[in-house]
Every structure is written in C-alpha cells, then in structure tokens.
Length: 160
Image 1: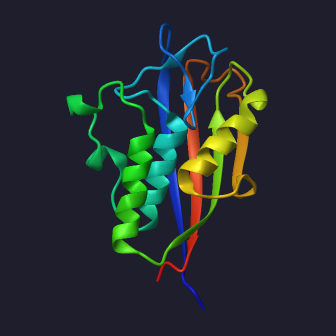
Image 2 (image 1 turned 45 degrees about the horizontal axis):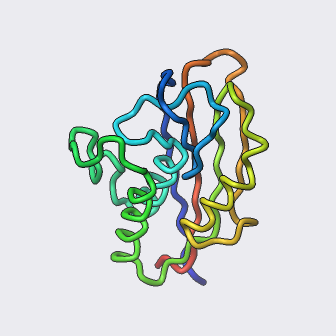
C-alpha cells in the first residue's frame, strides 16, 4: 500500500484600494480592491504553497519567503508555489500530487465567472488536470467585507 499525505494551508489579506486582486495566478479585472500584501497577495497561491509544505513538515512560506525580505516585495506569488513544490521533490521524489481543493472567501466581486481561468492556471502550476482542482467560492455574508481568504487542502500518494 502506498503512503498518503495530506496538507492544509490558509492565508488572508486585508483588501485595499489601488491594489490589483490576484487569485490562483489570475488577475481579477473587475475587483474594486486588491490584497494589501508584501507580494502580489495571492491568497490562493500562498495557501496552496503552505499546504504543499505542510504535507511534508517543511514549515511555511513565511519561513522560506519572509515578508521582511525586500526581494519578495510586490513579486508574483507563483515562484513561491514552485519553490514549495521543488522542496517537496527534494525530500520525496516519488510523491505525486493527486488533488487540490480550495475555498476562497471574498465578498466582491463574485468569482464564479473566473472559476475556469483560476482552476486552469492552478492545474498548470501544479501539473494536474483541471478535474483534480476543486474550487469553492464563498462570501463572508458581510462579516468580513474588507478581506480575502483562502483555505487549501492537498493530497499526495506514493509519499512514503
């Protein structure tokens, strides 16, 4: 029987005017505000990278990509995810990512029309078919209208 590993990641950022909103590597053009963050603030990619790292007890993105490092200022977050995947490949060569499941909470804009683009980009970034990337979009029901949040679970097999 092959080993199974599960990872969980979560990220959130305050929303601010004058910032673009990026989710899963996709710029959301109809967003009135974007994440106030050191990097591009892509909460979906940040949570995914943390999930990847947590699967193998490799810490979190704050340890590997600290927000105190000016090299990461306003950077595209996709290299953070690639770095996390590379770290896993170093410690578990036979591990195979099998599933990404994500929940993004944002009050506005509604994200449904961006689902295919986000799922496709995430799938490409992690090397999965799109039917292995589950995305759920929620609102905070007005409880937290000034933030964006993502929670991600990943599964691996052959991870010894």
